[in-house]
Image 1 (cartoon, protein in one colour):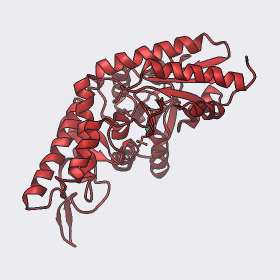
Image 2 (tube, helix red, strand yellow):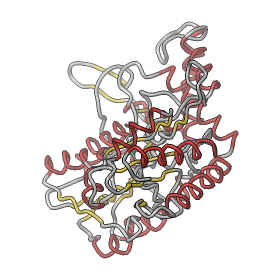
Image 3 (cartoon, rainbow, N blue to C red):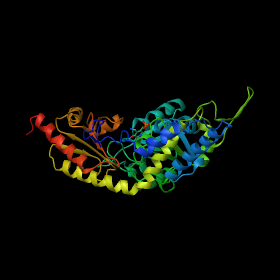
Image 4 (cartoon, rainbow, N blue to C red):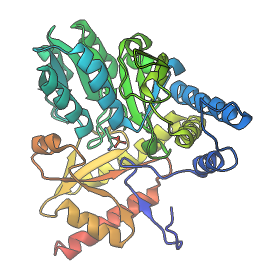
Length: 391
Ligand code: PMP
């Protein structure tokens, strides 16, 4: 990767947001340019074509995760998708005394919406601990779950450690007590093949911008029977069947949750991104990234002032800390050599508390990452050590 002036740039922050391939940029430009029109309303040809393209995008994105288009709602992103489930399914289902199981490793997006709905309905939140290598401890989860639990909401892959959840087992233990399983797929969809049927989850959410697509769009996949029972989220145009002042009825299917003019061009570019990843092969991307993760973990693991977080098979993400060098200092010095990592709490403050650190340094890989990126990061770490007087 290079900067605008052609200087090498080592982008190691794909877990925050991925750089876009030309195919996605071109798809978005075409949709915004020559093909642009609104959807679902126009009687003229271009609008009808745009409607077909928008619905084809829904099909492509749904198929990308092994789902059906009737089960896929476009949202502003994973955050909005989780809020949608909390505010519709959650409010309609949860009663005082019900319980929700989250884990210590969750992103704030998979904590705060549940805290909000729990406070509204009088439900309680339980927190599943982690194993010694920072995986979600499903033995502990199984022991904690009771008939009072109506929902288990877990990250499929941690955005801090890259730890992968055993989703089918999580589904089995959730379903055993009659709870639903929501998977936060933000960090799994870009790094591995996802099949919601095989994962056996009830809800799966992800964001396009982490999957090489645009910002401002993401998706909620929910089992058709769950979606059918969920009340609408926001009111407005496009989500209705018939409006009168006496009574309004709602559209069926995903459209019931898509009030207003949708993110048309973003949806089309989202589908282009899904196609791009599918054509490359999620398994090839996973294998490529795992090679880089393995090398980086090996090299960092050999340094006696480095603490590595997460398991060795972390998916595309390596979080670490260097004794007495704050991750922000490391990130700032690395930036001087055009190495971009993330330093901070990664929107996972409860996990930082658990790990006993204020922040971590995080290098995350994408399909375009290379050995040269790892070389540059390691050289930058050596330089940082020198600046801190560590030989
Ligand atoms: N969950 C996880 C695991 C994430 O990594 C992120 C993004 N950092 C989110 C949720 C929220 O995604 P978005 O900001 O795109 O809604």
